[in-house]
Each structure stands twice: as C-alpha cells, then as structure tokens.
Image (cartoon, rainbow, N blue to C red; front, side):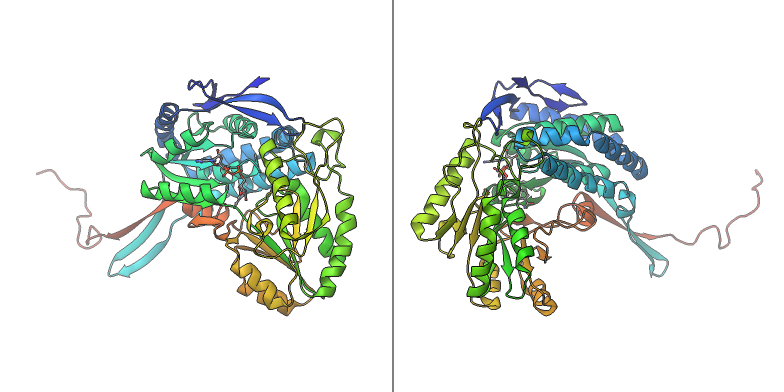
Length: 499
Ligand code: NAD
C-alpha cells in the first residue's frame, strides 16, 4: 500500500495530524493508498508560506507567468498517458475517458498561455478636462480550490491554471478519494518553473475545508462538488468576507422531439447517461421524449444499446464502456435508489441490479439501469443519482417538456434533439439552464468560453475558466488621474545656472 503526502513549498510532506483516509481501487474494492488528512495547524502554516511566495509570483510579469503555463502544457502532453492512468487508477473510469479528463483540463492551461491579454485593464482618455481613468486587474493573494472526485485532473486544472496565471498563490484541496493526479500535477508545475510555495496541495476532509474557510489570509474560494456542500461552503466563505464561486450537483434533461434523428438521439443518450458510470455533473440522467410514439420508438432503440454496454475495469483494455463507481457507499446508494424507483411504480426496462463482474466481485460495479414512465414526484427523479441510471419522463408536448426542465431545481446542463431550428432556438432562449446542447448531449463549453450552471447548480458569481475566471481571480483597481500644468507651459527649458 502506498503512503501519500501533501505538496508544500515544492516538496512532498508527510502529514502530522495522525489522521488518514483510505484511497480505494474501485475496480477491486481494495485499499491502495493511505492519504494524510491535514489539521487546521498544517493548513494555516501552508497558507502563511503561500502568502510569502505569492508576493514574488505576483511581481513576476504576466508574460513570464504565462511561459510557466506553456511549459506546464508541454509537460502535461508529455505525461498524458501517465496522468490518465493515475486518474483511472483512483477513479475507475476507462483510460480513453481518463485521457479526456486530462485533455479538457489541458485546454484551460492552453488558454492561460495567452492569459496576459485577459489581464489587461481599461483606459478612458479625457474622462474630464485633463482627467484619465484606468483600471488594472490585480491578483487576490492566496486563493483556494476545493475539488470533487469525478474529474481528478480536469477540475483541479480549471482551478489552478487561471488562478496562478493571474498571479495568485493557490491552496488546492483535492478530493480525498482521488488525490494522486493533483499531487503529480503539482510536481509538473514545479518542473515548469512555478516557484515553490505558490501551489500548495493540502489533502484533507471537512476539517481542512473549514480551516480554509476560516483562514483570514485566504481571499477567494473556488469549489466544485455536491449541492449541499457547495451551498454550505458559499455561505461560510461569504460570511468570512471571501469571494466564492461554488458549483454544485445536477439533474440534466434531454428533450427528444418527434422530428429528431432517433438513432443519433439514442446513441447520445447512452454515451451521456452511462459514460463514466454516470458520474459526471453534465451526465444526461433524464430523457424527455415528446409524444407517445417518440417515447416508444426511443425506448426500442435504447434497450439494445444499453443491454450491450460493457462494464469493466480500466485495465481490461479500451473496449470497456464504463468502469466502477467510486465507493461501496455510492454503489449501495445507487442500488437503493433503483429499488425505490421500482417501488414507486416506474417501469424498470433494463435492470442493472445485482450486476457482479467475475473476478471483481468486491469491485464497486453497477450495471446499467433504464427506467420508463418516471414522474417528477419520484425519488429517482428528484435525486441526483450520480450512477449508471437513465430515467425516461414522457411529455405530451414541447411546452410540457420545457416546463419540466424550467421547474427542476438544478440548472447545470440540458440538451434538445430536433431537426427544427425554430424549436431549438426557442429552447435555447427560454430554458433556465447554464449550458445548452442542440443536437449535442454534453455541452461542456470550450475553454475560451466559460462553464457554469444556474439555480442550485451554482452559488456565487462568474463561471469557471475562460474570461470569467480571470475576473474571479483578480480584483479591479480603478485610478482617476489628473496632472496639473507642468513644464510644457512655461517651465524652465534651459540648463539652470547656479547662483
Ligand atoms: P462532495 O461535495 O462530496 O465533495 C467535494 C469536495 O468537498 C471534496 O473535496 C470533499 O473533500 C469536500 N467535502 C465533502 N464533504 C464536506 C463537508 N461536509 N464539509 C466540507 N467539505 C466537504 O462531491 P463529490 O462526491 O466529490 O463530487 C460529486 C458531486 O460534484 C456531484 O454532485 C456532481 O454533480 C458535482 N460536480 C459538479 C460540477 C460542476 O461544475 N457543477 C462538476 C463536477 C462535479
């Protein structure tokens, strides 16, 4: 079993709290590593050192900071397979999906290579007689990133790359279930030239998160995780005067219109519903076909596709569709929710319960389940299942389907499949969800746009990555300047003689 560490001041540091978390291999159910959980004292010391290191980093000109990102990007590419393997080993997702996790984080690093252009201020010439106004963007100081288990590379990169490019120091608190990728990324950043202390990876659980939220030096908190924790962190950070953006859970719907290409819609639903075992905040967990005929036809197309999904460990090769879920507790919770759907009267068309994989009986695998006739009052509709379970809610009309989404408390992502531009345009305009796909199932925006949900999927302001991240990780200072008449109007131009 491996002993993991923190990353403080550019070195591996053993924890001193005496508390540890177990990191599992979800495919075998075995503990593969022991992770130290930091205490408040360890966190406070790491923050104090980061605050010292941040001064020199903020004084490093933006282009030099961006060059660190250029080297970092090159190193991520060079170590792509190693990083993907680290992701898959602790998370359980397939290797191609692990590579996708790294790739979507790398794309944010790539935008940060051009970061200086996003850090430019504004200027008003002659805002009054002889008066100029200009604004500048300055780093916040020490900021924190608190990240979930489901994207062990991508989300830490979404946090660290913009925060560091803006001249901040960062305390990164990765998920205690998948910490190794963050620790390796910190090593690569050091190799890329990041000064020691500017990125501190402090591992832990609630104790260290609360210490971050109460530490007066920490100026900003970027969180990604489940909705109850996002709301809690937002409240406590705001009470303590910190800037906070906290992204939460989701329940993402896909409307399928009668004119949609149903083969394409079914393919999209299977990928978006079951990929990464449904453990994506942008997973489609609810299909909403419009009209009985569409619903019946869609069901006929979904069943064979779902039944032939291959579930297995990432080590078994590239032909596996998805791997295990993250913990035994997650496995049991998903199975309990599937039972609750059956008890509530939904039709379990494909039953993934009692799925066991030969040779991996102790792994946290869950077979794919597909429910039809789900109604909004059922627990399987209301809860974010975060597992390989697709629910079908039948709608009589486009308006009914749209209103279902509008009334849902979450607002992360959504999609519509249709051949009609007018319907698609109306949907994009009226739906109260942050990211919308048109004939596109998982509309995670590219890295030069920004990522963020609405309603209970996000608390605070500004999105992740893209221009919004550069606003979140800097504060604006605006100068109003006037210069009184000087040497050009009657000043002494000759070399003055000494009296
Ligand atoms: P989680 O909320 O359990 O944990 C997220 C982070 O919060 C971890 O670092 C964890 O250590 C910490 N944490 C957990 N409990 C805490 C507590 N009581 N007090 C303080 N800190 C605590 O989430 P998870 O299970 O790791 O991730 C899955 C969730 O994240 C899903 O709900 C998913 O939808 C969501 N998610 C959202 C987005 C988004 O951008 N909106 C992206 C990815 C995942």
